Structures are given as structure tokens and as C-alpha cells.
Image (cartoon, rainbow, N blue to C red; front, side, top):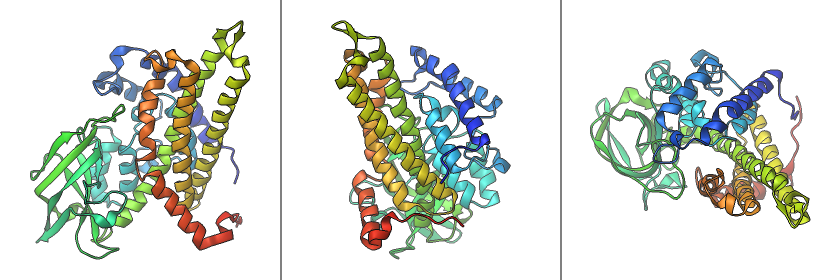
Amino acid sequence: MDFSLSARNESYRQRIRAFVEGELLPLEREPGSYDEHENIAPDPLEKMRSKARKQGLWCLQIPENLGGQGLDISGMAACYEEMNRSIFGPVVFNAAAPDDGNMTVLAKVATAEQQARWLMPIIDGRVRSSFVMTEPPPGCGSDPGMMLTTAKRQGDRWVIHGHKHYITGAGEASHFILIARTSDDSRKGLSAFMFHRDDPGWEIVRRIPIMGPEEHGGHCELEFNGLEIPDENRLMDVGDGLKLTQIRLGTARLTHCMRWLGLARRSLEVATEYVGRRESFGRPLAEREGVQWLLGEAAMDIQVGRLLTMHAAWKLDQGDFARKEVSMAKVAVADTLHKAVDTAIQLCGARGYSKDTPLEWIYRYARQARLVDGASEVHKMVFSKTLLSERADFWHWGVAP
């Protein structure tokens, strides 16, 4: 593959970089920019979103006919990385999880009528959305086959009963994609539906406190006690819930990697600036061999993660499912993010541990990377099964047409 960006993608990357440098990094240094959950507060968010729209940097991932910029996945990889050099970046450009993945899957599978009702308000930034799948034990986590929440058909409606938890963004979402069991079929037993926060028959039990900073809307526990969903709000065919989930998560897992690489880079940027000017025993820390080893190893790991991510993006652009490539990128980049920020804190000492830099924010946020959208151990199982099946062909090169 050619690792150079197209002129169009490079133009967007540079414009995103300039926006982050000029608008978002200064905003991070203002205490009033944060809400009570350590994310960007509503007023500065709307101000920045308005600027992003005016500069043509809104919804890079969405097709142009739906109001986005229509970038391919390789272009998204470069731009999302630049966005998340700021901890505020993705949400400003309407590229933050879970809206990002929800918009992408609705653009691919929803009918025109469903897109007008459910997708366009998210693209326009008028509402937030959430993906409702994970359940408390003994319900489904990494294994969708353990789904306990049910959708029973009654005439032209589906009645939902069940219990979900760790549902990202649910506290502020208006549009929800729900995965529920519609039969006992092992492969076609799940279906997907849309519902609105004002629909009766469900409730948010609590916003679950977490270790790190939260996305807007937090991570919530939900109960369904007879929510009725019209059949017209079903996505795809009955039994296609697992298929929709796979369509959504394939790209969504990779966009996590893109964003995490931005945070990893930001961590090393903070560290390199500090060790370049901080002196110890008459020499800058940057001249110390031990410091150089730490920086060099973290920088190398970031570059490895970038190559894995871009390779998976390129394969997705070619129409490949890229399952093993996405899983390998997810595992590697999750580890790299943690290593990069941990290294940066170590090099910055007390300053890194304090709130004078964004490093402690990134450090707490980074721990979830090895859990969200499939734990690292699950992804290792995915590509190890591929290895056992393909053997030596696991490392095959693609052949150009």
C-alpha cells in the first residue's frame, strides 16, 4: 500500500491540526472550559463546533450527500489522530464515540426514512446518541450470544424487557440503537431497533461512576420494562442484530485507535518539551541516555501503532472486513497509549502527576482502552484463531489488481 495521503486528505489533516493548535489546546488551559465530568463544557463546545462547521471540518466521516465531508477511512485515520491531540478534539468535530460509530452504521444500513428521522439530527449536532448492547452478568458482554434482553413482537410493535449497563452517552442521548434477542437462533437471534429517550417503558437507573474522565452522557445502567418500538423503527431485517453490530464495531474499533494515537502523541509532546528545558546536574534531561531510551521506545511504539492502524484502514477502504488487522491494531494501540502517557508522566515527574498538564487526565482515560469494544484478550483470541486457520498464510501479502 502507499502510505502517502491524497492531497485532499492531507489538506483536511493540516486544517484539523491548525484548528487544534489555535483553538483547542489554549482552551484546555482554562478551568472554565470543563464540565463536572472533566470534559468540555456545553458553552465552549457549541462555540467550537460552530467554528468547525464554518471551516468545513464537520463530520469528516459522513458521506457528502448526508452533510459530511466524505473522507475515506485512511483519511479519517490521519485526521482523527490530529483531532485527539486535544482531549476536547473529537467531540468538537462530531467524531467522538459513540455518535461516530452510530452515525457510520446508520449511514450504511438505515433506510432513507430512518436516516431522515434518526441519523440527520445526530449529523446536524442537534442530538446525541447511544448504542445499547452490554448487559450485567449473566447477560452479554464480549459474547453477544449471552444476550438476555428480549424484544417480543406484538402486532406491528416490539415490546422490550431487560437490563443493560455501561451504556456510553446514555445520560445525554436522545436517539438510541438497541440490540435485543428476538429468537433463540444462535446466529440470527438478535435484532436492532431505534428508540427515543422520551418513549415510555424504560429508565436510566444510574450514571455509573468511573475511574477516568467521562464522555458526554457518561456510562449508564438502563432497565426496560415494556418499552414499545414500532416495527418501522427496526434496523435491517429481523435477526440481523449481530450483523449490524459487526458492521458498526469494525470501523468503530479502528476509530478508537486513531484517536488514541493522537493522545499518545500529545503525551510525548508534553514530555519532550519538558525534558528539553528541564536541567539536572548541569545538563538538560533530554541529553541523558536513560531519558532518550524511554522517549525513543515510546515513539517507536506509536509509529508501529500508526502503521497497524493505517494498514487496517486501507484494507477497509478496499472492501475487506480486515478483522484480524483491526483486532491487532486495537490491542497494540491500547497498550501504546498507556505506555506513552506513563512514560511521559515518569519523565515529567511531579509536574506530570499534577493537573498542570493533561497527562493525568490522559492516564486515567487510557486505562479503558484495553476494555472498550472488546477486551484485549478477546481480540487476541480473534487473530489467534485466524493464525490457527491460515497458518503460514496469516502473513500473506495482498496482490494488486
